[in-house]
Image (cartoon, rainbow, N blue to C red):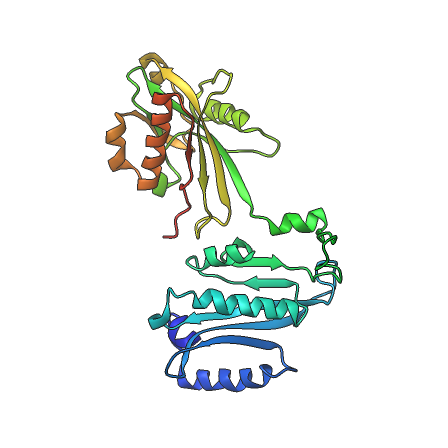
Amino acid sequence: MRSEHVLSQPLSEEWIRRCADELAPRLSPAGDARAFIVDAPDGTMAACALGLIHPVLPAPAYPRGLAARVHVVATHPDFRRRGYARAVVTALLDHLADIEGVTLFEVHASVEAQPLYRELGFTGSPALMRMTRLEPTATASTPNSRPVWLPLKQYAETVPKATAFACVYFTDEDDRPLQLHSVYSPAHSWQLVGGTTDHGERPFETAVRECREETGLTVAGPPRLLATVYGLPGIQWPYSTIGMVFDGGRLTAMQIRGITLDPQEHDEVHVLPLAEWKALMPARDFARLRTVAEARRTGEAAYFGTWDWGNE
């Protein structure tokens, strides 16, 4: 199943034989491998999940010193989109946790499979997703039982990680959006004024600092939020992104001419009607720009929740 439906280059018959000979004894009760399958009507496998148990040093979150890697999850193309992958993975995880005493789980997931594993409790990037599932206590089923809480530092390792950014939205006096041309990001060449939040910095402080560094302009408060932006992680970046776009107001022609760019970051500043930006930007970047422009026009702050990192 792994060779035919997971690997980009199928294994040779020799390697399949060697893997089968290696795996067979490890699937015994005394071995370190566990597998669950869904049978197809003809007796072959419709889907399967294989986990490998390995020791780790005991810790409060790993009291038995056992971890497991979800090594293979495969579904025959004829039986996809029936929930079989979810069924075999759930059965595998439940068995490893409830019967084998495993509390730490790891998986190297594809981008397509990442949402399933997140629903099951895994966190992290597709390159390495992890989950800690503590053993139930003896009183777990009693009405007055209390949940077992992880120590704060251990819990912090299980939650999704995110980076923050803040931007300033400027227009000219005709409400045409202003953007800067990046010298370092060909995939996102036209950008709002702004950047990533530094440690200990609040979003509007980031917007003010980045604006001063990138344009020489000083944004006056109080802050007026136009949009909150959220993006899921992807191959290009392993963390979610959360951003805020603040209103910088309308600039006069003299102010625009007076913008001083940092040549290490940007080499052009343009002001164009909103519709003309569409041909110059990735679709999700233009959708974000359009959302921000609409928020300025209506006076109602917007939420743009699909500025995801690309997987190309």
